[in-house]
Image 1 (cartoon, rainbow over the protein chains, first blue to last red):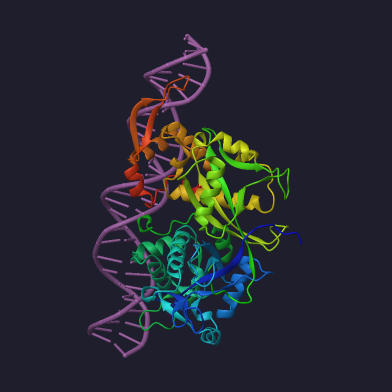
Image 2 (image 1 turned 90 degrees about the horizontal axis):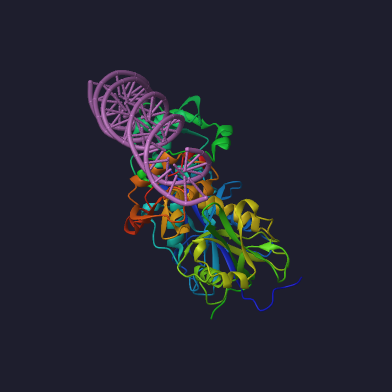
Length: 232
Length: 232
DNA sequence: TCAAAAGTGTTAAGCTTACACCCATGG
DNA sequence: CCATGGGTGTAAGCTTAACACTTTTGA
């Protein structure tokens, strides 16, 4: 294979912000490192790019290793490349975020990697520039979730309106009016009433909805404008 | 310096989509390549990352080489990394877009690189995955320009309302109502009437405005909602 | 005086917001 | 029966969208 002459070759890594929702809070899956460098500290899920891998494939590999899940929602955030961001050796890291239904992950895989679901609000400081990565990923999640109906990726197949509302309140860290939220969501036609009720509840049982997937596909790139605009 | 063992090191490049506006159309600065690979074809402005450079610094270096301009608006789009995207040797490319006032560029520098301003609508096919990069950059420009007042980066210091409107019509490739546009823009308080009139015009002379820079800074991250939402 | 572009106001419709009461359930 | 959370309607204000005529200028 021909090669470019005189050029500088370096490591390319991938780091993933894995978002989950437990019904109350947004959580991220973080690693308590038992390996160098920075053993003992917290970091994102990451790894190096292999020779035969596309970026998205590599990100999916890392995500599968950690959660046991395929076909999850993944989006690139951006590349982080400060010269000294990794003190061991220069590495450019491509950052992705993933949205998963927290109930779906494989607890064995998570345990094996010494990973933990940590509430965003209690996130410890992370190594290198990983705090910046989380900040940027959250910003992008907020943008996207305002414009497109991607919150559903964080919920189980069947979910209630109050759950959905709590999710959006958690994403934006802001309270929403129950009546307005309900009206707006139902008016999108994205929700299908399953006829079932949430049996977990100890008080009045909420209606379980599922996502209208055709409409979801169609409308994904329609402007959604779900959130009060002032919140962004 | 310690190094990571057993890891694959590769080239990291940068490619820039340089947007300009000539008063009628959005243009991009493209290179008619007189060097390998793919000599004779069109490509984006690009180059390799150096050992001591941050990504943004490297992008600014490329932009300065080509346009003679410092301190221009630059934003990262994302990393492109398909295994075979560069047939010579695997290269991950970090893509940036830049917005410049087309009148400000240094014609000598542009000429020396065999670069040309090409209207988006007449853009030829580009090498490698550069067409995808342009598509993605344009998408990001549209998003951002809907939410934030960054169109001004493409205009001269003093500009008229009709120019501004043509700019937004070009960004979205859609017509806008003159009266509604004018009302909305003036109501933002972002425009300051210079008291001068556009002397170029052969018919009625339009008022020249300049940007209220303090307000621009303040409001950059305010949600702008300039465009009819249906256009996204 | 004519053609071409700039400037300007009003109305109707739709959307957003704010707000309060009743219902179902399990303890 | 009471505490908790689910479900629902309405009115006011604001924003958006649609629409046409007058003014300025230079050729």
